[in-house]
Amino acid sequence: MVATEASAPPIPTHLLALPVPGPVPFPTQQPRPLTVEDAVVSRVLESKLTAGERLVALVPEPVEGEWADPATRDVVGVLATVHQAVRLSDGQLQVLIRPMQR
Image: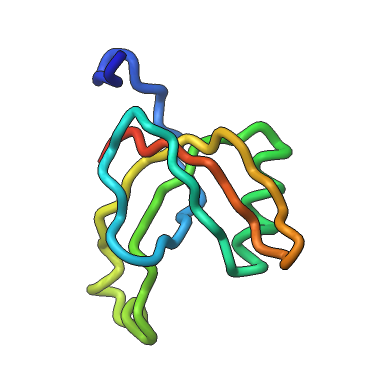
């Protein structure tokens, strides 16, 4: 089944912006792994998952100083559902996500 406008979940007004290295993935039906290396982002994500929030916005990882200028803060992201999160032995958080819509 393909997600359509009618079957897509309502988008909350505030989402956690999860920076991803490299290009932001296109929406697909296939879950994919993502490693969250930033300790602060992983703690915030874990707390949101504990609270029952499963939607995140995948955004490109900023280059040093890239978002310092307010004019460059508009970025294209992808709405994704977090299916599972596992803390690895090295402290990183491995999450299984499914990109849903741009």
